[in-house]
Structures are given as C-alpha cells and as structure tokens.
Amino acid sequence: AIEEDINIEAPLIKLEKSEIWEIADNLGYLDYVKDKTFSCWNKQDGHCGKCLSCISRIEGLQKYLKIKEGVESGK
Image (cartoon, rainbow, N blue to C red; front, side, top):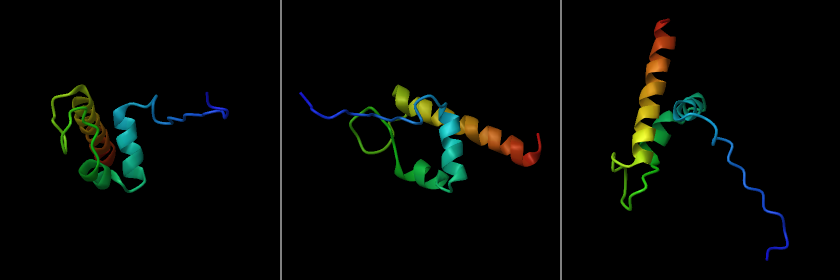
C-alpha cells in the first residue's frame, strides 16, 4: 500500500476537443500541438485516422477551425 495520498488532476477532461484546440491556439501552440503530438490508440508513429481517439481529435480541430473562421470573419 502507498502511504501517501495520490491526487490525479485532469483539468481538460470535461472540455470538448474543440475547446482544447482553442486553448492551444490562445497560448500560441496550435501548430505545435497539431504537428508534434498525437493521441492514437494504435501502436504506430503518428495518427491512424481510424481509431476513436484520432477521429475525435480530427473532428475537434475541424470544429474549432470553423468556429475560429466564423469569429474572425464576423459571422
């Protein structure tokens, strides 16, 4: 048994993927996160584009970019 308390924090867990992309963009890391990170469940380098994690990531980015485009164009 562990004699110390363990505290696990997951501050992004309740956010939609599009909201996470927005945070990355607001911090100036959109391209870095898009190009240098992945969350694929399959054992490979990069995105498979087929697993739920990849699909969720792609859809979240697309949703965020549409929202951003609308905001920037005043829609």
